[in-house]
Image 1 (cartoon, rainbow, N blue to C red):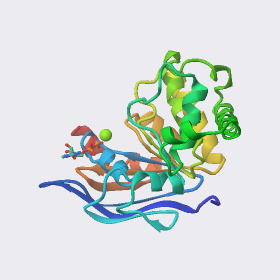
Image 2: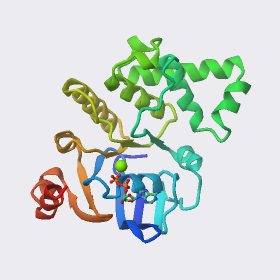
Image 3: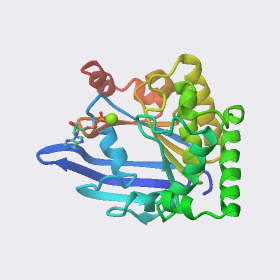
Image 4: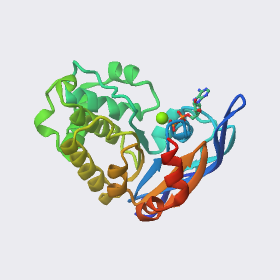
Length: 253
Ligand code: ADP
Ligand code: MG
């Protein structure tokens, strides 16, 4: 999609868990070529929102469109097939397997068959194509020298980048990243920020949930702030940083 195209659009999304309103009429869009950050104190509803816009959970009310398609009620593999790639808050890699194998699995997550079934049925030509695609993504992410290293022996910052490479192997237009900088050292955060900036310039849309304010403020084009399930502010980093409601929400955290 061309830069500026709306990739995902949530309109008045509400999620109730019994009597608890985890998201209340949340609206947000992410465009090709931008990094959009979703921030807010613990319990604000960020993960709930992420789950609803990736097909893990359905909204109680509201609309989610991915590249113009209405998505509510569709399974997460449909989101992946339409161009959504994601990573999870906790690293999910096969630690004993090589970086290359881990990334090659990502190319399958996009398919309609389960990846395991697909792997078992691959012929040698398909397998070679898959590994070549995985290698391209590993190079794109600057991990070529580690392609044959067991993923579990890499530093946490590199493991996070392997997860991004795996998501990229599914050819997404939009990446959802849940706290990609959590637990990383300063230099690792810088490497991650450089990669996300590169991907943005290549035209991907990126939505990150992130706690690290310095990371978010330096990287994001636009920020949406959630508190108690409600959007309390949105705008550029400079706008959001001086918003009194945002300061109050974080002081109360
Ligand atoms: P955040 O990711 O911003 O920390 P969450 O989306 O995880 O916040 O949680 C928002 C609120 O919804 C919290 O009060 C949490 O306890 C509640 N919540 C989240 N998931 C569930 C669930 N499956 N069942 C009941 N309550 C939930
Ligand atoms: Mg969360």
